[in-house]
Structure formats: C-alpha cells, structure tokens
Image 1 (cartoon, rainbow, N blue to C red):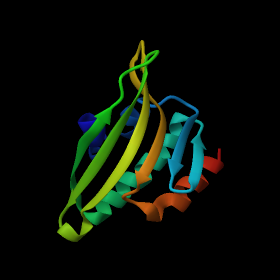
Image 2: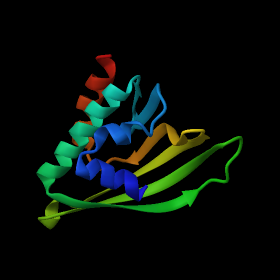
Image 3: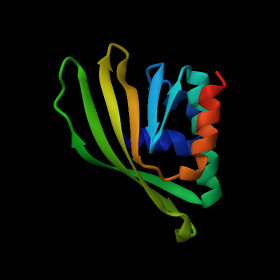
Length: 133
C-alpha cells in the first residue's frame, strides 16, 4: 500500500491504474461507480492527485488496520490513509477497504469501498468520469 501512495503522489498514474482489475466497482458513501477501463481509472487518479497537490500534500502514509485471511486467492485489506500537507490545514484522513486477488501478474484490486473519503468534493467528477465511458 505504501508503494501505491508513492505512485500516486509521484504521478506514476498508469502504473497505479495497472494494479486494478476492470471493470472496477468503486463505492463512495452512497454512490457506486463502475470504472470500465484503465484510462478512466487514470483520469480519476489524476483528479485525485491534482487535488492533493493543490492542498499541499507532501506524503501519503497508509496504516493497514486489518488483512483478511485469503480464501480462493481473494482477501480484503482495510487501510487508513494519512495525507500529510503543508500547510497542515490541508492534512486529511481517508479509509478504504480493498478487495484484492492474487493473479499470475501479481496482486490486483478488484473492488474499492471508501468508508471515509479524504476528497468528498471530487465525488461528482468521479461519477461523471465513470459514466462518460
């Protein structure tokens, strides 16, 4: 998860998008979107990165709260994210549950459930990007 945060903050969006399986269901509060392609995921991740950069985020630190024991190659990971910003007023926290699977190409994320979004203001843009496919 630390590597995922580093990829996002450093702008390596395509590498980050490659860690997902598509179509990708994403739950955000009461909204559900389905991201159908890596290109749509990259667009959403770019929006997220731009928002973080504008807030002055300089580090993204994951704290893994729990990892489920794998069953049939699938498991969930509960992660709390701390986005450290300068100035400190831009610092935020988010939480998500990642539904993962072990694939021949490595670990893939099949679904994401944001239990606490650090950027709720981006929810309408995420929905528009997912629906514009």
